[in-house]
Length: 307
Image (cartoon, rainbow, N blue to C red; front, side, top):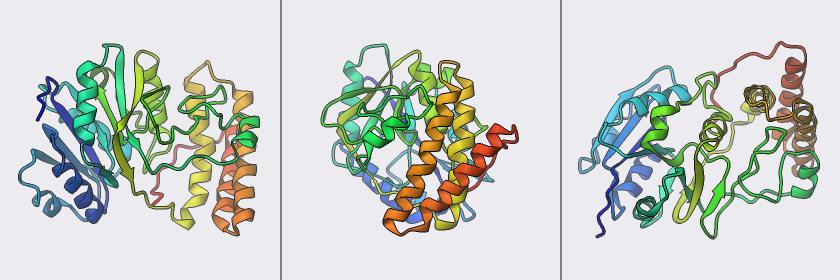
């Protein structure tokens, strides 16, 4: 087994998903190289201390942060990282690490140049976006993976066949240099499940550091669909949270954001009609209400749980 100079900590925010957490920790326990520290940050109505107790061979620390909020849980977990750790990041509780993923990631970091600030595991079951040509007309997608457009919309990263540079990285599947976590924290304006909090965080980091997707550090993201009744909330977030992100970064275009959000409304509504599913129409309605609130200056900071 190779030895590595870096020591790594992972923070795992969780809420009421003991089976998923157990599956994820089991995939970590089966790795050829284990994290040096794991911090479970539990925001659930029922605690998961019994799940943690099933993995005594790993160095797991349990924290309770309630009421839950993804950004706040991530920040609380990172504050608990041991000072000796040179790398630290986040793993979602619904991930499954494939064999050798952690070792491959650490091997990447051994040779990474000092300008690399963050490296993301490769989500191999991530969907490739459809309708890119139409979406690109509205500046909500592009053929180029993992960039952030002038509208403030990020393009999907997708499965990578080789190491790929990006301008943003997903929140729950990325490791960061110690210097990064000392300088940057998640913006707790983003409440609840969170929407765009990871884009906001990684985009800020990406202005100072290089960001990479490590192709052979493979994971699967076994994510739950958004609950039907929560699609309206997601639609509002798609407008309100996006405008918050756009206004934080003067290089983005507010008029282009409006154009892109109109496109988002059309995409959500069109998908709903094509699939005979009300979820897209609920999102489109949420988009519309959120956009009107933004235009009239009545956009509010809103929490909630999507899944």
